Every structure is written in C-alpha cells, then in structure tokens.
Length: 469
RNA sequence: GGCGGCGUGGCCGAGUGGUUUAGGCAGGGGCCUGCAAAGCCCCGUACGGCGGUUCGAUUCCGCCCGCCGCCUCCA
Image 1: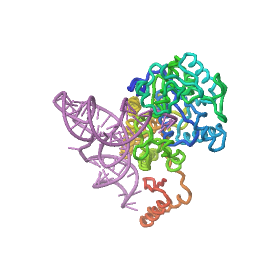
Image 2: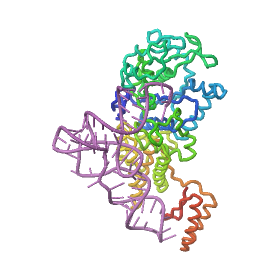
Image 3: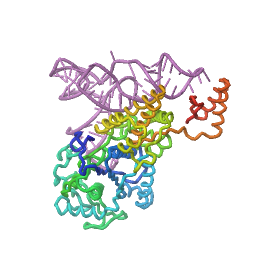
Image 4: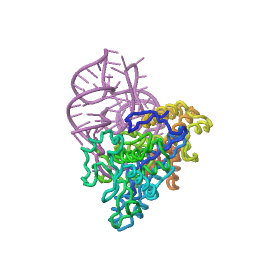
C-alpha cells in the first residue's frame, strides 16, 4: 500500500483512493508564454513517475494536466512582440510538448485549456458572489479570504500571520490584502469574455478548480505541483472550492524545486534557468530522468554540469548491462506505454526476480523513495554481471531482465545496442581484429587510438572487438 | 517578523535508536586482459555545533550556527 506525504496534513499517510482501483490526479501545468526549463522538466518527470508507478501497481490512472493559455504574462509577451496572445500561447505550447516528449514522458490523459472553460469559471465566480464569499470592485471580482473556513491550511499559517507578511500592494477596494482576483475586468486591447461584471478574463486560480472538478469530480485523489505553488496558488484553489461548498483534493503532493549551483532556485524571474532544449542538445535526456530519479521528490535537486555528468555515468552503467545481456526494452509495445507489474511478471518466460520487485515496491510505497528503489536496481546490475562472469547465464538474464523491467516501470529505457557503426569505423574494427589475430599489437593499439580519436570506446570481448560511442 | 525545510564519508544522494552494508560517481589495491576498456572482488570506520532523554543517538527533544524555500508572479 502506497503511503504519501500530504501537504495539507504535513504527514505521510496511506493513499486511500476515492474509487478503489482508479486514481484521479490533477497537476498544475504550465502557463504557456516561454520555453520550458529544467524545473518544468522535473515537474513532468516527477508526475510521470508517480503515474507510471501507480500503473505499475495495477491501478487505472487518470492524469489531468492543465494548460494556462490566458494570463498576464502571455498578454505582456504578446504586447512586447507585437503578436496576438493566442499565437504566443499556441507556439509556447508546441514547445512545451516537444520538450516533454523528448524527456520520454507520457502525455497526460487529459489536457484542459483555461480558455475552453471560461463559461464554467464565470458560473463558479457568480456562485461565490451569490454565497457572499466574493465581491465586485472597480477592476474585478475578488474572493474574500475571511469567508473561507480554514484559509491557510496548505500554508500552515493562520490568516492573521499570512496577512502580516503580505507583500502585495495595498488596494483600497480590497477588503483584505490577501483577497485575490477571481475575475479581471478587461483593459483595452486585452482578450476578454462576457460576464455579469462586463467583459474580462478569469483569474489564475479559478481555472484549476473548475477543470479539476469538471473532469475528475469532487473529492478527487491527488492534486500536485511544485512547492512554489503551495501558496498562494493551491491555497486559493482550495479556498474557492471550500467557499463553494465543493469537496476538493484528498491529497496534495508537492515536489521540491530545481536549484542551481549554490542552492538558489531556478526560475524564470531570477533568469538563472537552462531550457530543456539546451539540455537535450548537450546530454542524453535519459540522463536527466536518472538525475531526477536519484533524489527524493521532496528534496531540491542541484543541476550543474557535474551532477549531469554523474548521472550520465550512472546511465552508462545501466546501459552497459543492457548491452552485455542484450536486454529488451520492456516499454517496447507495452500497452498504454507503461509497465504493469503483474503482466510483466506473468509474461516473462524465464521469470523475473520477484524478491527484487517486492523490495523495489517496498521502497516506492514509502512515499516514493525512488533513490532507494534505484539503489536496488543498481544492486541487480552488479549481481547480474557477477552471475554472467560466473557463467550462470540464466541467472544473469533473469536479474538483468528484472533491472530493465524496474527501470521501465520508472520510464527509464535502457539501451542495449551500441549505436550505428558506419562502414569506415567497421573497417578499422575489422583491421584491428586481424592485427590482434596476428599478434601485431603495435598496429592494434594504433587502430584503437584512431577509433578513440573518433569518439569510439573500444572493448575487446570474447567475440572480437566491440565499439560504442 | 511569521511558517516550513535542509545540513550525511572527496562529490552527489538515501536511510536508521544499537549487533551487517544504501546506491552512484571519483579514488586506492587485486583479478581478468597482449596492453586497455568493460566487468568482478576488497578498501574509506560519514552523519553541522552544544546540551538533554536513553543502558546506548547520526537517528528523539531543546538551543545555537549555517543554508534554502514560501508569505508577490513562478514548475
């Protein structure tokens, strides 16, 4: 039974589902106005792993991830570039999915867009006004946080102390500095929709309330995002749902942020980010997944050239086993693109090491201790090599297959092929084999140097020379 | 000012009240190899500081120091 840390209670507790066997999860996706960076990559990878693990356990997962396609940032960007806001959003969204695909993440099962839900948002805001929880001002409609039972639940702070720390500008029309916009009245040139309060657009927090409840229903299982969304975004979502008398998320799952050298968080506003497209050109995207898998989701990860290089080495160790044992990829042809434990165990003709799978799940069930689970995978790698060295090929195959299976469960594909070897390179390899057969080692070494200069690592195995990049 | 988190061996990074180790990377020794590479075996007696609880704490409690996050937009 999976146990998860819930931000609302601050405790790790059993992940009990609303509907047994089915998981409903909603994660706060991007505002599409610029290129996604490493932090967004972690976002996608963390929830990709959550989803895959739930599926691995045999659960049917609905994974909703919204796209915010109307927002101040988009409007500002459009104005600055002399473009239409919807074009800015559309282009940024294309970039978003390209980057997430490159990371090997499954697409969410549903991707609602804010602009498609405006009428329903208007209904929610009107309902909140009707209930006396929201009020109209000169520039919009605001939620009165005073009217919300338990405001501060996620921030773990009472209303008074939140108010004392508030850095927002004083607005005479707002009853409390913490009151937030549900509806923003349109200024000239801004995208707008009709409403009882005149033309305008929805505030940021409202869309997630409406879309999550529409798609997943009240009391859905899991709501997630980065730790930077806890307050005010998620607090304000919960506040609206509570004020509207709707049951909201049962669990709140927040992951820690990506930090740069020195521990400062990576963010667009600090301008210290690396885009995912840059990352993917400099390293194997699987290395970034492994980097994310090596730390717990609630710990910050430091991404630097050194930590990426470290992950690449680890990846090479995993790939090395796949090469040696010619392991297949359990994700190839997997229904839904996910590995399911029971099916995988049943399908493997020579079996898998079920003890290792159980240990893996024990670690994962403990609030997703992915690093602990991966330690077990690396342990399998060592044991598989040792078995192969000892000539116990069936044992080695079973252990190796298990390692590949568990990597696949976390969305990490191992690569067992050495990559395409071009004709020129193959000729050098053949020449080197011939030289070695004649014990002309000076020539063999010269050829190895030549191959190395071209970026190939040369390995002499029992079946002759093998090269790889 | 309020709230929360973190400080583990050269580096990254889990975990735990005590007889037996996370794991990866780097490093040292050995085996294998024509030499390498890959792989295997062995090696490092780590838990910010000061007190307290305890038979015993890195693990619980308190204080202190340092770092970070949130309280404004942000994955």
